[in-house]
Image (cartoon, rainbow, N blue to C red; front, side, top):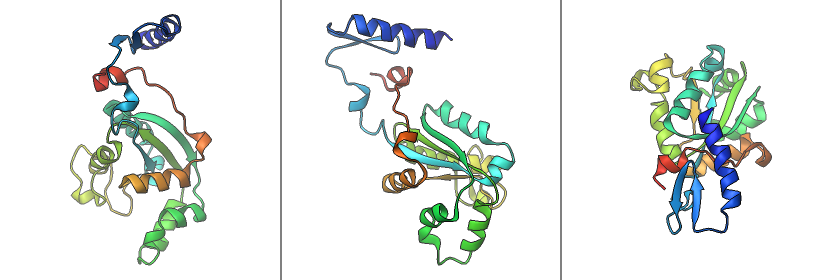
Length: 193
């Protein structure tokens, strides 16, 4: 509640002080000439995280979201859907020739998926570390797969593996209007602006 009040108060003060040399950001004064959030390289990087049917069935959605929020990433897109064969064939196109591909499609269409887009500093690299190795037997404790997965065929979550992959996957899973651009009140203190 206090954070919401501070954000609301800051927006009102920004309107009245817009012509001065000081800009208010998240309850802190930021002197003119210091970097803004948008000028910090990598802060607005985005990644696709998808909680697979086994994660949804086991009611792990909230715990997985909590890990990304606690890490300081900003949720900019979220939806639950029954994934179509068409979307999956585009998403997993590079795996079509693999012997496990038919089973992968069957698994991914067996129940709902929660798709999310997270934004933050080096979010792709950090998310891959948070999610853990594809094979849960090799995933470190403390990672999503290390804590929640048992077998590689049911590894709870997908995370984009590169900037290019994330951009392609986000465009497949989300329409532009489904992603929100909003200012997170704690980013100034998080990034030391």
